[in-house]
Image (cartoon, rainbow, N blue to C red; front, side):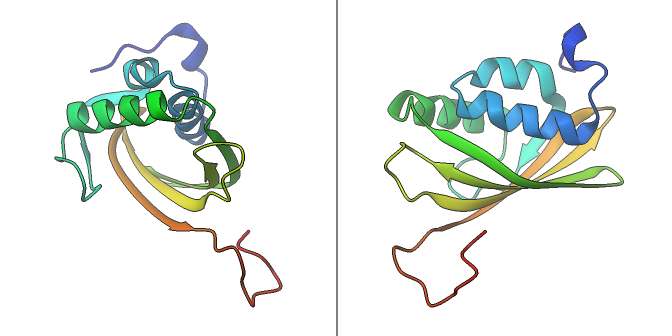
Length: 132
């Protein structure tokens, strides 16, 4: 099981999910994994194997390619052992970005399962409410 640093022990699981995403977006992928990922972690991203290592390496590669990534959390919802975080993610500041939902399942205060779903923000849309 990952070892939590004292700074994270008093955080709620919702705060841990948001902190995990913020660390990953800022390029601190290994720190995020060390603090928040549980030993039996698995994920459901269809582009990578379902283990922690493959996703961590992909996140590190993305962080290296996009060092100015922006993640703006719009909403975080916590229910039982699950946290959903709706964010606006831009790979670089000029990018329109995408709307992304990360769904985390926690066990013993660690992330043990992750789903992520996203859609690009179109340049033009008939929806007067916007994507957010």
